Amino acid sequence: MTLTPVAPLPDHEVRVRAPGKINLSLRVGPPDADGYHVLSTVFQAVSVYEEVIASSSERFELTVSGPQAEVVPTDEGNLALRAARALADRVGIDAGVHLHLVKDVPVAGGMAGGSADAAAALVACDALWRTGLGREDLVEIAAELGSDVPFSLTGHTAVGSGRGHLLTPALTRGEFHWAFAVQHRGLSTPAVYRAFDELHSGGDVAEPDPEDDVPLMQALRAGDARALGAALHNDLQMAALELDPGLAEPLAVAEDAGALGVVVSGSGPTVAALARSRQHALVLAAAFTASGVADRVLTAAGPVAGARVVSASD
View 1: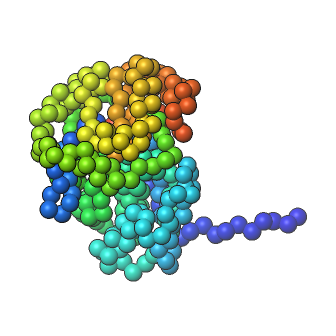
View 2: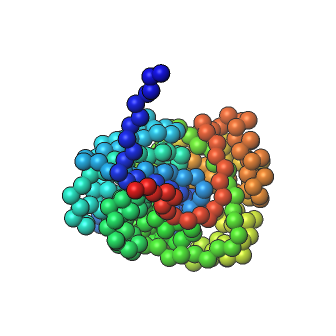
View 3: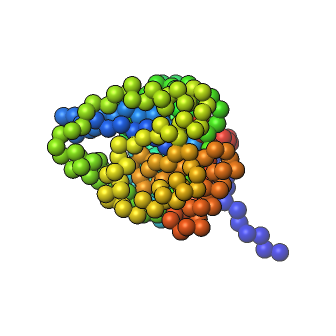
């Protein structure tokens, strides 16, 4: 009998899971001197996950599997690789790493899949290299990588200010259930912000006022899904619809199917519909599927924890 050779196990491997997010509220102010818009946002981490498996390597390299893996860059443009290099530079590690990304969060879908990869890579490489850094140090590195990366590390529900990277935990009660209409055609976040600026070229953009989200915060503290649905808000939604008018269809389908609230997630094009229960989320998902308004349909619950090690081997 001929045995098939088996590749040796890596010396050390760490698997980390990080969640996608939705913006329950996203309020956009005017751009600052650096061109970044001042934001006031309420994030919620949901149970759609990216996994990053980090293993020992002489080089920095990356592979990808899962939905839309073929459109994910594997070169230095990948945020997970940039996160690994940033951590190595911070602690003076002279080693490489092989990162394997298992995608599930929509690519360029407004749910921070790339940021989740970066957060997971930070946690995985921290464990792989045994750097001993605290979570605050990782959050500091995360903020240098992108506006959503710190929240991908912390998860749960939080208020974001500045570029969205300054986080304050938000009190929530209970669990909220969601259905997502995912499009394989992504939307560029910079393009959506440019469209936002064009829509407000008259200069009618005010500084975000956190007081506008008081009803939403009260709904979260009470665990009141119906009140939360009524308070969902996204200043970028009209800009996303300008670039992708077809998003009006899943928005309408969710409303017709009895969603408590429906909103474009972040810069889009994913449409998030808030359900009354886990069972109702399945009903909303079935409506998306039956109407043919989504390339992929997901259901999830939130809030959930941020990037966490799920397994490690020596």
